[in-house]
Length: 465
Image (cartoon, rainbow, N blue to C red; front, side, top):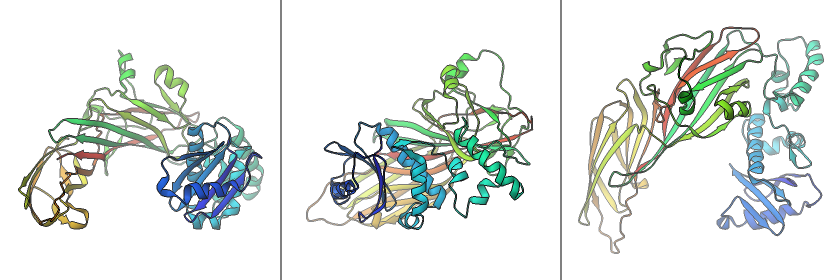
C-alpha cells in the first residue's frame, strides 16, 4: 500500500515527511522533487512511475501532496485518501497552505499517525478524529456537550471508543436540538456545446444533493426522488413526508417539503428522471439502493454531500442563444446575439454573464443592448462582456455590435471562440429532478421540519459561432 507521504512547497522543500514501510528511504523525496517539481512543463499525469516506485501527487494552492508506493496499489483509493487528507487539513486549520502546515506540523504528524497504519488508510472521518486529536481551539467544542466537567471526563472516552470502533463513525448519539430541521439543496450544473448550425453536440447535467442536518439522536432518514426506475415500479399509492411538514414556500427560494409537487415551476412537472452515475456519501446504505433504489441513511450532523449524479436525457436547457456573426471584409465584424429564456415566467436567472469573443485585432466596439443588462468591450480579454443582473423567464434580450478591426501586415485567421454563458436559476432543475419526500424516523418520535431548495447554474455552457 502507501509507503510514504510527503508534502512539498512550491520550491520543492519538504514540509512533511512520513514513512510507513521499510521499502523506501527518506531520500526518495529528492527523486520526486527532481523529476516532477523541477520540471512542471513535462508533467502529463498525476501518477509518475520511476523504476519500481510510483508517485501519486495532487496540487493544492501552493503545495504538492505526494504518496509513494512500491506495490501495484489501487490508484483510485490513493487519490481518495489524498483528497480526504486535504479536507482534514482544511477542517482543522481553516485553510491548507504552507503557512498552516508549518504552524501545525506537530498536529499534522499526529493526524498522519492516526489515518494511516502501515500504509493502509484507517478512519479519516473529521468528526471522529476531532474527538481525540484536538487543538485548543476545538477541544471544548467537540468533546463537551452541555455536561459538567466531571461528567465530560467520564463519558468522553466511552464516546470516543464507540465512535472509533462502531458502525456509525460519522455521528455521535448524544446530539440534541431544540428544533429539529433538515435542509436539502439540489445543485445542478448544466453543460452544453452547440454547433454554429444549431446542433446540440453535448448536453448533460452534473448534480449534487447537499444536506444540512440538525436532528437529535440517531435518526433514520429515507429519501425519495422521481427516479425513473422507482416510479416505474410504483403502480398505486403515494408517499408522504413524515411529521412536521406542510405546504408553503419560504423566502429566499427555499421550499418546505410536503406541498404538492405539481405546484413547482420548472422543477419535476410530475415526470420521471433517469439518473445515472450515482455516487453516495458513505452513510447511505448501498445494499438497499442496489436492491430497490431506496436511499436510506443515518445522516452526519451538519452539512455533507449526500449524493452526486449525472443525467444526459431530456435536458431542459434554461437558455437558447441565437448568434449571427458576419465578417465584412478585413475591417469590420457585425454581431447579432439573441437570448431567450426557456423556464417559467415565475422564475428568474441572476448574475448572468455572457462573453462574446472578438478578433484579437479589434480596435473599437459599438454595442447596443435591447432588453436588459449592460455590455462592455474588454480588450484585455478580447471579448464583449454582457452582464444581466436579473433575467426573467420566457423573455428575450438582444445585443447588436459593430467591431472595427486594425490592419495586420500578416493576417491571421480568426478561430472564432465560442460564446460562453454563466448564470444561476433558483427553483429550477435542468434534469427535472424532484425531491418527492424525506422521512425521518427516530425513537424519540419527534416532529421535524424539512426544507428543499433547487438551483441550476452554468457549467460549460458554450455556443459556437
